[in-house]
Image (cartoon, rainbow, N blue to C red; front, side):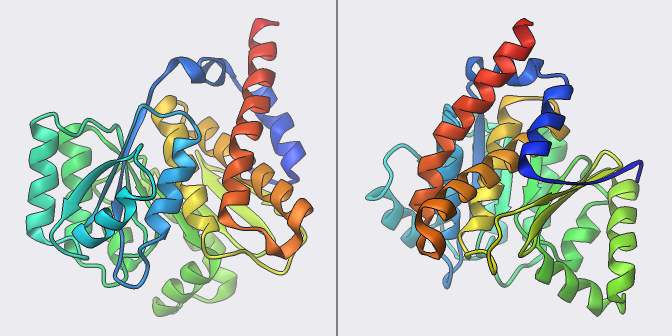
Length: 299
């Protein structure tokens, strides 16, 4: 890695200031659209957390593709999302075919696809779908998980982004007989070899590996994180990507906004904060970030 920065969220903001902020200054002039695909029988809420987090960025269209029972339960909660009912909790060949046809007909026109969110029994259809969306429709792919099949799929999907938990990554790589000392080098090799980005959420920091650079940003001083935080982070990353072409700036901006929102919720409510407490802070954090970028761009 050419850089390995261990920084606070405020230092991350200062780093963002030094980047080309042209994309951020035009953030509110771009509509943006994403599709979130997932939802499992035992985890039907992660998808909604991600979709609602992305909605606070002001996207024009947010598609949610999930099993019909999940979609029906979501409709009464959030009417601003566009729902695509699927016939199964897993992405079967029929589900993939349906989504591909909807893209071909122009019914779905999302520029970014976020895949995962509770899909526990993953099969090859998730990666088949990712290949189709990337190769046929030039869709940016974001995986909300990591697995050996996910790594295999990276051979054919460039610029993909993986958002995962540190524990998930450690368990996976131990299956490959990779020691804890060797995990960091293995992940760096993946990023370099496959031209991807990886965002790793751990108890005390977030590690970002993108464009041959590594950033480690400290998170609030707490004993851990709650289950709904990773989908919120994934939703923000997908939302930022739909509004700008600068991949690294999109990831850094989304991570900064996520940490800002969590910090504020944690400082106000301690460990009793909820997902809504985080989401309510997203708009405030986004406004401050965009005001700063506009000032820098005009100067």
